[in-house]
Image 1 (cartoon, one colour):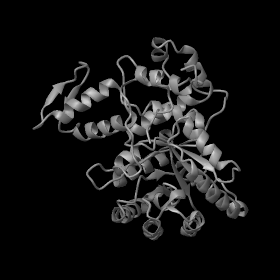
Image 2 (spheres, rainbow, N blue to C red; image 1 turned 30 degrees about the vertical axis):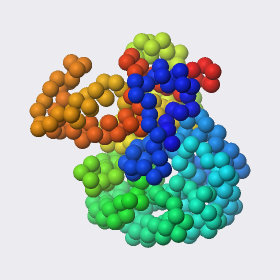
Image 3 (spheres, rainbow, N blue to C red; image 1 turned 60 degrees about the horizontal axis):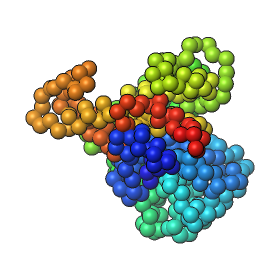
Length: 388
């Protein structure tokens, strides 16, 4: 798959110094994880699942999850499973440019989906396992590996960390240590680790307001930090960890001032666009995506297609980031030098891992042209076809 391939060639040429590269389904696992971007969850109870996937992929969504868990009532599960199987078979006839996963409740659900599709051509990109714990996760990953070998497909698994054992401080480190050992045994199968912040908040009767980010909810923010500490290490023992869902997408009466500065939008003749984003609560989402990155998370779970542009626009590497990352990566033997932009010092030792991850992100999401900001990318993604 390739990000932004749905944009016209002239728009891509205007936006990018270096356009995104194609990321094959059997490519490097870290590149594939970074390429997930905004992962859109779609309730499996929808009658038009295959059409929905194709429509969203045509609009730039590059990863989707057909949800058999929280989005489906218990009495509707059997019917939803059948709809997932029908959708996967339909999509096999004309595959969309997107990775399609299935979130299951149990290993039995996974087996039923595999039994239903029957052929490798109809196989999903993999499975999302909610409420993962060490023992259950080990059994699930083993079962997925067996079915992948049987069908001859490279199933990936995305475990969702969200249980009380991880959230509660007295059990957190032991649980995460055990989970790290399990996931490490199945490293080639674990595509990314997802964070279930909604379930975490629910343990304390909390639902964050749309004027706040998840990092303002301290019990959840502390848990995210612990998850990254255990599972998001960049020393070869960790995994890509994705950002939690942003729940809001409607107008509302604001309690606090908008989180978006006016200057970047004024500089890019986009003041009205800023007003539109604020009215749709996208300013809070943009703030949270920036904080996700600052806390070691990449990509994000989304539940509304209007959120995709914000996540993808902020995933593109700026020309400044790219030049700094190349300079750091090229430096041998340590040392420090001023950025070409004369606004920071680049240290080849402590900044090297950042540089390597930034260059991977540049490969997947591209590098902006000089003078192009996330505002320009968002406008291009949000504009109707023909108005970009």
